[in-house]
Length: 173
Picture 1 (cartoon, rainbow, N blue to C red):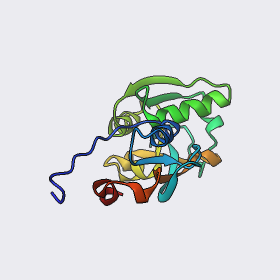
Picture 2: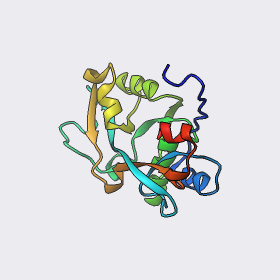
Picture 3: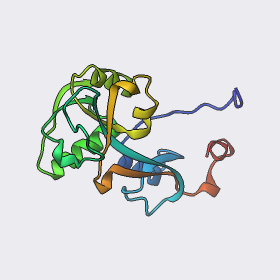
Picture 4: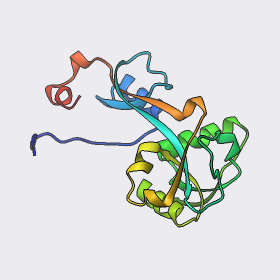
């Protein structure tokens, strides 16, 4: 272990709450999507995260599609992450903006479980494309990228001021 005397409290929140916690001094660093109001924060690019719909390989859903709009999948049966999960809340907000309510067959705690249930044809799910491609059951999945603009999330490492971080937080950054 490279830093045995440094402890990290890691919490998951939606991007807008991460920005709020940073601005108000309740957190030193955060990773947030660029769509959130990050104007009062310093930012560094972290990664780009593209969302995709996954379905069982033998499912008729989106068969042969190269991409799909979220609106075209919103009436399907979904496997989702638990309430409060930042990714799931993002997807639910997008559905609400369309006047839709997603029908969840099952809600679970991990992406690994979501992917396993989808591969067993329990329903479809929206997950980061990279996670779906890395999953051990990928050969049993159909991965169809979402074509909506919001489905490509640019994630940023944020701080109020990177120059004001403690040496430990600066090292983590």
